[in-house]
Length: 396
Image (cartoon, rainbow, N blue to C red; front, side):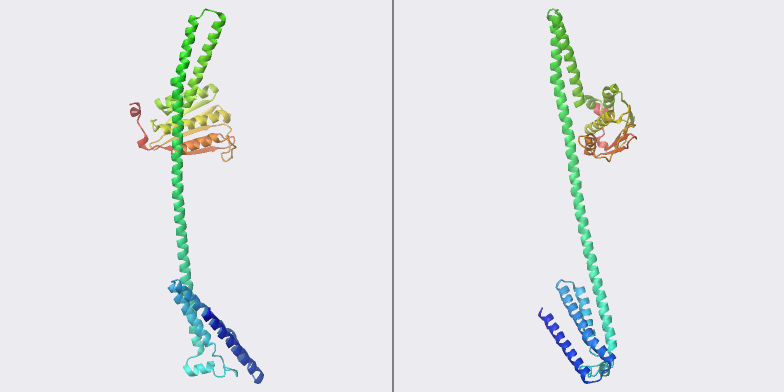
């Protein structure tokens, strides 16, 4: 910058002149060391330091002005002015037999103005102090404003992220809901086809075997073969019936959740030695079929896990109907496990599937267990009243 270079050049020339005159005064005359040292300190340190500070503050003020920071520019200009005048007053030293102290001294300033130069220095020091404090306050205010803006931007970004996460979570739940519904619809379709087509074919096959038994001669080998075929046909029919029921129990659509659970426990678990006690609290009612399906699958999977892993003969089921939610609690007093444990697939998929089903309909699933203390699985699903249908309407 040309102005800055000119200022530095003038300052360098000034210092050379002062040093030269100090050497001349020292060699040709008697000097009072205290005054001589004070004059040199002021000439060589105070004056250059103050003027350089003034120049630096002036350039900072110009920069602030170009950035449209008017308050900061004014404060810096006042501080620069104070430093400049303060530096110039340092030229007026105690009278010493050297240039320029012989003619430009504190005594000469007092005689010319009637005001001690120290008073001007004090005033300029106050101007510098006020200007710097004001500049510091302006910078701090700007920093606080920038920090507030940054925090606001960060908050808005976090809110936007939260909105996106909420949308994604809602989309995920809707996708899971459709997946569960599609799975159950496909199960129901396969069950109907097995029941309507394959079961009828087996029934016809059984009737044809009975007709053959009456038509064919009473031969021991033929009779034995027909009896074996009849037995196999009955076993296939029973297996097909169980398969259809496992795919989609018709009782769930016709009778509701509670009767279907009782039938499930009596058919699948009582014969295996697992006593399942179902307790219903509140007034049982029909709700959205997808909710009944979710509760049925969760109960089925939970009791199946008890039969396989809990090493106990008892399980307790609580189904609580409240006005705005339904709660299913499955408890046992078996060996328990650590819920925080990371299971290696396929272990843990049953629990994950139950949780996904419950969350797909906007519910929550809680697992409470510890080694040797049994396990409690609780599924809580909100059921708005508009989804609840009285038994009379369902039967109608």
